[in-house]
Figure 1 (tube, rainbow, N blue to C red):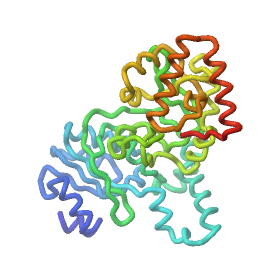
Figure 2 (figure 1 turned 180 degrees about the vertical axis):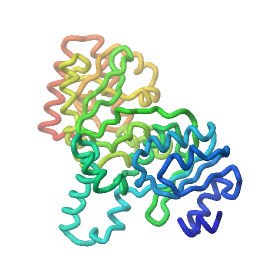
Figure 3 (figure 1 turned 90 degrees about the vertical axis):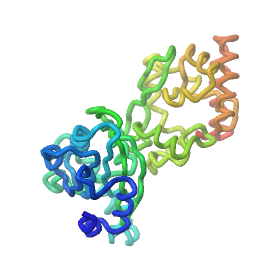
Length: 344
């Protein structure tokens, strides 16, 4: 088995596998396949499955992961690999040609990333590619695994491929409504703890929502209160966030009565768990808003400053429920327009 893995993936990759699995064990299945039937139809029981074929060439990636999930027990190991978009650009010869490389990769992105998601173009995509060489970001590759019931244990790159060691922890989510479009809804906590879908322009890769715990475990929070070194962000996403452009669709939530123009930020359930209890209680009594208090008060965007600004706003809001939002709204606009306050 060592010889097979070394020939296919290299000595370094074999050593990586050996740190996480008993490669020579009869309870370890080592395959190089893009067809889930080669796994599910194997009559033996396994506590570890290693697939040497990159998942970019699997037509139905989640179905493949779901079949692997059904073949092993909770706590068992699954190891797979994929090529990221970044690694593909570095590998491709055309990536060294100025100007032309940009034109080529834009065309490739449209063909391999946009076409599969558009009605009427799917057939063209599969006719040309047969579902192979799918473009995958690191965030989407890992996020798909988590959505299919796996916990990411270790990630390491060898010879242009990203290898992932994960463990089964639960059944798949069977999410059939993953958003790839430019506008999507994020689940956020509204008034009284009600979960609402907050509209935003996409700034993260698909399946990024499944990786928040993983990113926080790896890097923790930045001073802005957002996950540090967040690889889930797209290159254009950073620009949209900095200039508040990603939040423009939230006007839909305002019209639906789920958000106000000004108020505490709509946050995830995960982040809500990390803020002080007294602030949790005050937050639940108010609708979240589009313009957060730290902007209106012209505070820094680090965690302490943001939470302190929210506390001051909420205390004032309780005392003066009718005038507080008006005051904070115009202060926020002034700071954004004239003091050039930017998103944290």
